[in-house]
Image (tube, rainbow, N blue to C red; front, side, top):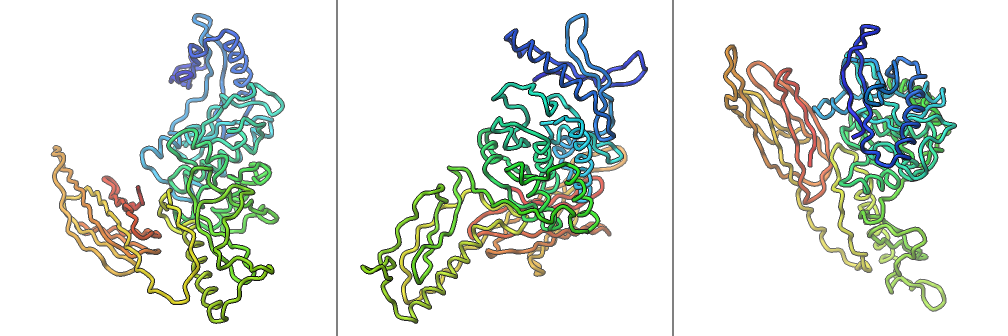
Length: 487
């Protein structure tokens, strides 16, 4: 919207550069245009003062004398940005992802040491060179820490990777870049955006109010300390985050070396945040009965809102004492309530699997007084798994195991899609629907063709009656096998 980037030739120094031109036609008020040009010049010079291997070099900044077009000249680099790589379906191993985040954190530390805050760290602003080295680009909305180059109330940054203080138009410092980098890290590690929603307003609401699921619940292969790294970088309050980007880089270095993170000691994770109002969530509340916990299940209440009244049979008597019950009945009720509390806790806790838990949960009615006689528990409905297998094979075999038990053996055949001079390409798609019991399970997939074999595993936790989709893909060139859960 604000301009175009060209590949250009610097005739004075005989080099190829990236030339960003700035379009001011969208700024219609003359006073606003003057302010924008002043801010553009100041921030371009801020970016030009940075010199670090992890930051793209700024060669020049100015205005074309002929048409008045503003421009910035950058070094031209081979490679692609992280957003483009992920759009093409490239999923980096977790070690490579953390190494990228570590190097970006070191580059940000250099900028912060110079008093410069980026304020728009996102995958599209991180270039990955063929060597694997990342470079931070586009300090176009950066500012000096001591300067206020943006007017109050203006929102600068990308909502999906914006910090809570940016979303609230509050004062920012280097810790806002750390939050944004944590959101990038979450996307690299899990393949999902931490605060994805269907509108900008809901995205900003999640940025400010809601914590994403720990990465290990989406990919059990991640190390346990990945949850710590993400939780600390994505803390809502800047005081709960890393104080400096170098501390994040050092903790990642320790995790990659299988050492305890050196900056973890003394850090207390903030309490988890609830979903914003209007997003259903289930909570378990223990009532204040003197002798027996009562469990109420329903949507979370606002702070200070009164709890629902106790069932009449559990209210205190005239003298402030609970109505007595026989000891055997008390023991039975206590055991049943504790079992119900455990069930509610397991439903409300983050899922320790790579499956997404459905975002909307129906509120359950508050339980009435439990009877003294037990009814047989209903058998939960099975979950349904839709298996989509896409393969570039003329023929082969698909095998699927559930918790070590073979569920499926299917021969697959592909149709010729292209007839080239030297070889033919074949491919096909196979869909199977399976019913599995509710709970946590592990799938193992094997694909065989000719004398080749590929095997992968993926785990998940299934809710009764829900439908999940397992996407199985076999690459066309390297024949890599990949598994992922999709909606």
